[in-house]
Image (cartoon, rainbow, N blue to C red; front, side, top):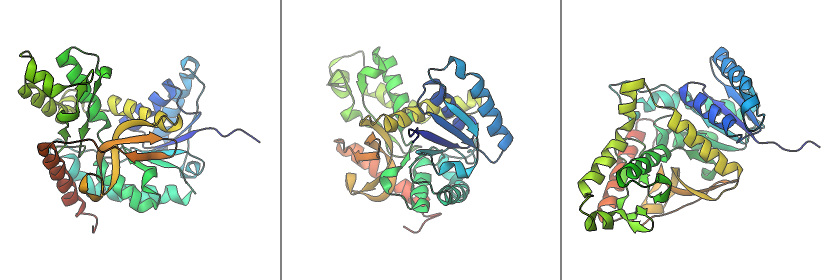
Length: 316
């Protein structure tokens, strides 16, 4: 009997899907990688390009252009397909278009017999993750959105630059919507176990105003990148690879993802970015961090923003 190997299916081989696929191959995270796209030539070209570089990757991942039938034996299906927002739009304004697109995709995936874990990157990611959960019928623990994974990486990077500390030595999260209503949880952000709020209170080099400017820069980072290069894809590609690795390696690592709230933080029936423990079964549990009064109000506001947008496509 052949040994079971890990398989990832990527739906959508645009900039995000291709960057994710490249990160998977370059880090040898999965043994099998199937690329699926409406434009089969594009998917085939990406598979060819990745295969030509396998000689120099850590492990010879099997990569091919496939179709939805290949999802049957996939452990993870990552959906990156959808329409992108224009300069005049926010992530939330494309919700109806992308919900229709993802409904069609998810139905085809489930018809294949898929029974693994969904990772969702299509925007607006919190709502599209909720939609995928609804359309798939899978347990909420096996439908995970990228959430504030990238926003948190940006936040820690900018804090590292500000405090001149390696960002990997900083603990903290951006939570809420992956969008304009997100918030930086300053009250639980620490450097070497010391609160950043205590640091700015006791060291005149740093100010709360600077921290708030960093939060704004994080929120607007995608727009700044888009102004310069059209869109953002490397960061989220690497972030999705990290999430995939956490699942396959059963890491039980805490990552800020779009997770279904079932009473956590006092809310229900919503997917939103919060820290959660990720392992081989998917999302093991949500970690409720202690928020101050202002942060609780901002999270509540973020949830209401998403709820309002969801009313366009769901009866909640």
